[in-house]
Length: 261
Ligand SMILES: C[S@@+](CC[C@H](N)C(=O)[O-])C[C@H]1O[C@@H](n2cnc3c(N)ncnc32)[C@H](O)[C@@H]1O
Image 1 (cartoon, rainbow, N blue to C red):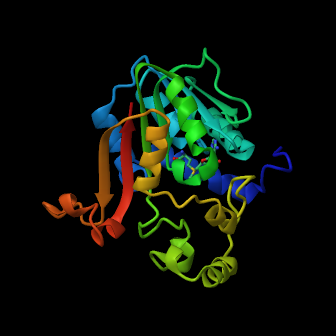
Image 2 (cartoon, protein in one colour):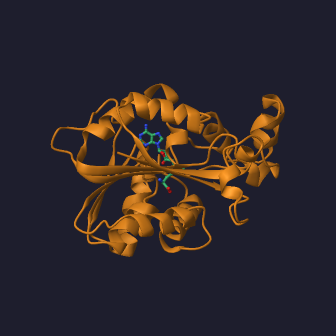
């Protein structure tokens, strides 16, 4: 029985399938570059891992399945935590735990320490006014040599609006906002979240994150950027990577990857 705040059966099945795809798929989901970079860069064996903003848990369970590690998934939205627990029961992966948590109201404690903290496609959804507080807390919950890995689509990117599958217009975030709202409202799909329950809520929830904004926040939080990769539509063309962060080529960057220490 699915409690009322959670969702209708059809939505539940869609969300579980989506989360399972995020867990299973190594090549075609929006997470495939994240997964290959994480595999190349990190060994999570015997580590304590926090998947911050874990959503429905596909990536948390992917860490837990691929390494003998202890994974904790936090998300502010209890509906996503419900889905993550359901997916975990379905996949029978024991070494992960999920918790609905708003760390601004219920801060991380001194005994909550992690070796790796991942924010996959989360930073652009966090209310900008609390982003610094969150990074300060995450920094202080790192074990010695601990690392934070952040991935997100920067605001200039073609799909940063998160609604191009409905509008069919890349960079539609730059359209007059009333026009864009009308386009989204025509197909304002229900999502799996309780807080952001529709596509329009999700669009409103975006903080329009850019590398410039995020690097200011992480520096203020006392973190250093140790590595940056900007994945661009041009990344397959040899030599083009160097141009990624120069206007107008920066509008072709689809995802940013940052390692913070
Ligand atoms: C696009 S989803 C990404 C989920 C997951 N990381 C993934 O890669 O599939 C963004 C998630 O960030 C969560 N979120 C937004 N603000 C948050 C906050 N302040 N604390 C924790 N989670 C937050 C949302 O509830 C949502 O589940």
